Figure 1 (cartoon, rainbow, N blue to C red):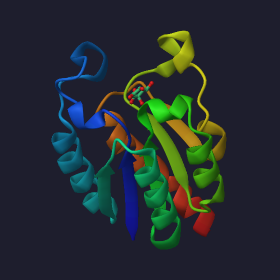
Figure 2 (figure 1 turned 180 degrees about the vertical axis):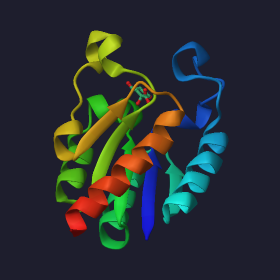
Figure 3 (figure 1 turned 30 degrees about the vertical axis):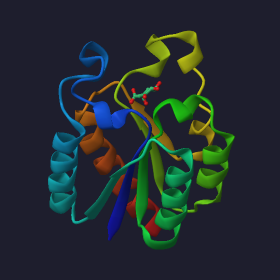
Figure 4 (figure 1 turned 45 degrees about the vertical axis):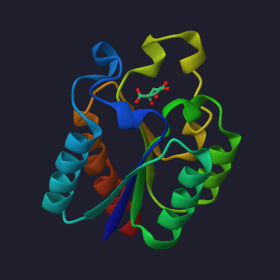
Length: 147
Ligand code: DQA
């Protein structure tokens, strides 16, 4: 079973980008840890990042066609993208929105998520560790949907 983990704009800069908010862990480190936890949980993890909205939409569609579940950190597109909301709404697989930071504890413009209404659950505020927690949450969603 394949889990897609999709990362949006500027997340390629993790580690160097505002480490006081996003932590010092790089996206490559997160990818390694997420794949390892995935293996423990019996999943293969397809881990991707793009700064382009269209690429993320293509990957949501690919995940819906081929994946068992989806975790997405849409970055700033969280707050702006009707197109990602539509893509997620059409993707009928267990899906979680994830943020490193607690978007409710920051600027007012981050408090609204355009994409959250189109996913099963949202996880935020746990930094890099959130990726592993989201995998566990997704496993439970997949199992409850199967049963
Ligand atoms: C983010 C939160 C967004 O508001 C921001 O634009 C990001 C990262 C997070 O993971 O905390 O790029 O999605």
